[in-house]
Amino acid sequence: MHLIQVLIYMGFMVAFGPLGLGDQTAHHQSPATDDGEQCSTCEVRQQIKNMRLHAIKSQILSKLRLKHAPNISRDVVKQLLPKAPPLQKLLDQYDVLGDDNKDGVMEEDDDHATTETIMTMATEPESIVQIDGKPKCCFFSFNSKIQANRIVR
Image 1 (cartoon, helix red, strand yellow):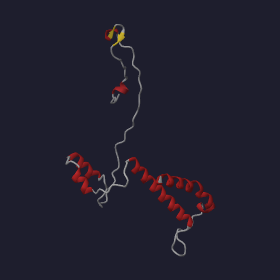
Image 2: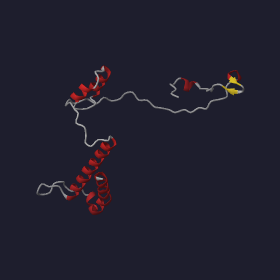
Image 3: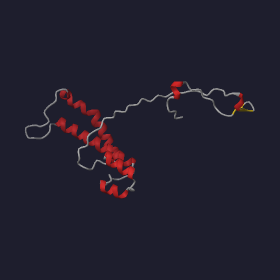
Image 4: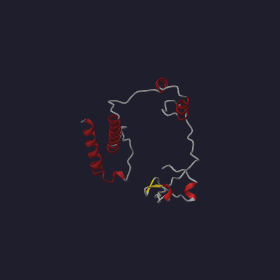
């Protein structure tokens, strides 16, 4: 029930928030006022951002059927997972959990591939492969362009 209330409140804030802002969105005000607090517009934006983040987290947890986020460190994962060398190598190579503080260099992907879907219909096979006038198999004819590629199905 709490999640529904948050989503409804967030919907009202998104729907009615810009009405009270007027032209303030076009002319950005400084985020800090004289006494060091945020302006009302910035506070509303921050509240909407926090509510949206909370709603997304709640949806993820509910879909995973969890009441709260799990607290698992990399050390625990290493102990729980089987010592499969390929899996451990991938975890170390790509730092899947991102718990360590080393600055990883992002590698650019030099390998680019384009996928292509080609649909072809079966043609009537020769009479040799027919039983009682009914085909025993399907016959597909591929041109040289298709034959050079890997056929999935």
